[in-house]
Image (cartoon, rainbow, N blue to C red):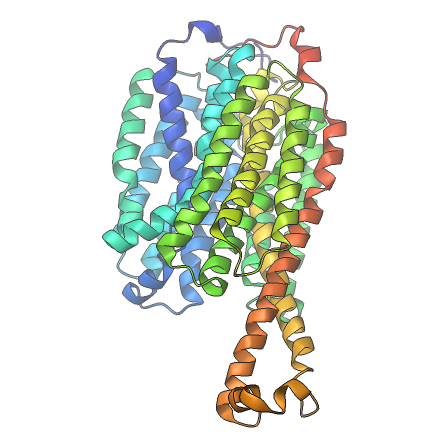
Length: 521
């Protein structure tokens, strides 16, 4: 198959790829490691804060440094795979990610931890798109649905199980094992790739598009900084947030202009002309928003409002992963037999139903009702994700798969960052507004506070009564804030239904001779 420069590269029929099972396992391990490390450190932050002598503001850099580095380095993955060979890049990234994980576990100060997390994010950025492109290439068209379902377990389950795994490792050992746990899996994946992954060509004549990468890095980095620090700095009342917003907008604008005007940009603009991939990118953005934001909201909801201990919280949230895995396996088997857009429609409806149910949640809701709702939500995500992979690459040429996979990862990560930022901001603002509104009822003219035991306990004229009243009002305000967040996520899911209308049914183009799914780039 020729590339843009006219050079031809060898192809291998996907039904004759040796060691396909081992390669699949290695790809899943790499995906799971990267997805886990995006969230596994969340619950360990308070323990790291003491060990690294950091403030509550500074310790968040452990998370943001990883996310920013991964976001910036995701876009050029396709170019790096073409320039240095997919196998070489895959091996380098797995080795670098594993080594950086060990450095994170051994960090003795906050600056060391931030530097090591940046390295971990840089190497980890390529793991998901490389794994996805590899799986697509080693399986024939009729088996890609099942293969994507199996691979997608790592992408979807990683962010869900990350906080639970991090909590148990921190409780049983210490926070350093949150990073050390990557060593055995990283070594296993590394050996498997070195021995079983077929070699891919090295296109040494390619030149890197530093201008495009530079403006994209500035845009993504500034966007991530603005989202991470916006609530802390009171958003646009802060000069820092204004500067970061301007840089983000300018960087993205220059990147888009450069993408469509440059002679050889590091991302081919042709991938955005593919209607299926373009619609899938928008759908992935929405899925990433719900996947991470809902998980980030539910954990503090259960712990702070429902007063669940951390281990119980993990057990209550675990069924979400069960629902996701079950639906991904089902949709993987059906994606090539029926219209995958119908499966995604079912997923969006399940997602909307779960969010609608959560808008009526109160802290005294039974665990059984919570588990059922969480399972439905996980099933909805699974029914969206697997068919989405089939649709996204149905009309995309094989030579663009790595670029397409990188863009899907990038849109998922950006969607997750924006979703978490918006939902936490909405939570804080809604809580403040509701607290102010509920506080109006605490006045000398409220007869409920004028006599009896209520007057003795909740007399706002006494310090004890005022403190109890403020605590009760704040709890009710937080409940309203969470309900508003669940409504917001329900509303932003609705446009996903209309995205299905933009997608073409893969079966209609499957009869066309799709470019042989080459193992080589």
